Amino acid sequence: MKNWISVYEQLPPENQTVFLLNNKSNSIWIGCHVYIENEGWFWATSNGNNLYINANEIVAECEIDDDCEITHWHPLPKIEKL
Image (cartoon, rainbow, N blue to C red; front, side, top):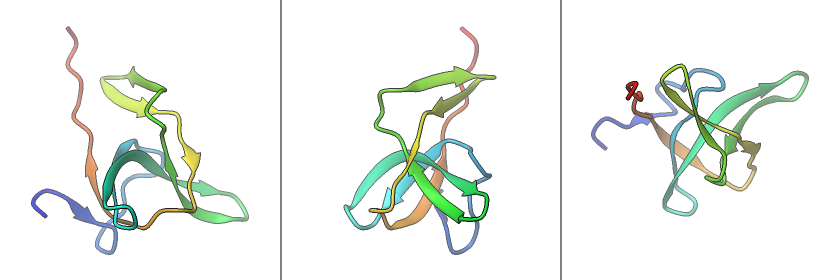
């Protein structure tokens, strides 16, 4: 897939909101890769209701989602000031 990054080659920066390709449901989600102390790394996804712009970047409120199979990710576009 052009411009999509395999999670087996590189992971997105921690807590950075990105597009996620969920192979399990063959769909694209918005989410991030998060670390929880003493538990490890997890994928967290957004329901799409809480998206914000912070420092010209799209950020989302996400919750850990164990029911996904993320294989690729893609950075979200930067938002230029209007």
